[in-house]
Length: 121
Image (cartoon, rainbow, N blue to C red; front, side):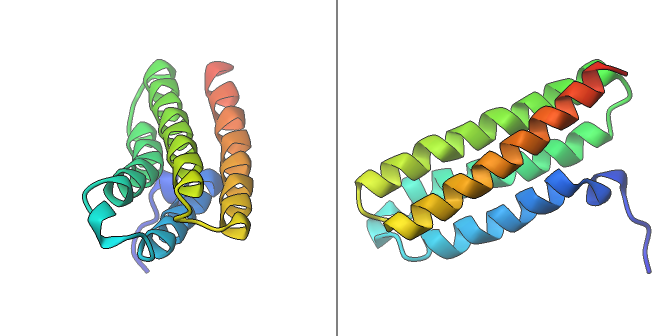
């Protein structure tokens, strides 16, 4: 087996990566005219969560690590905003919406815990 990088061991990164796949599956059903609109925005923002976590682990100072955890948290809130809009436009149903919100809450809590541990080092 190949080397496992530190970000790959983070539960919050694993959850974020799985969340990206959920976003991709859900946005496949969005109207085709949203391909360069909400679909693209949701996909990019969800990828940004996992990517910022990965990038943050490569930083040397805790200040830098906290910065990237904060960026991941901000991207997650961007996703939440876009999910709310998608629900109001009837692109996602009630069940999908509630499931996504539950995942966002779970990831948010883990991101907050990660940031706190980084700040306390």
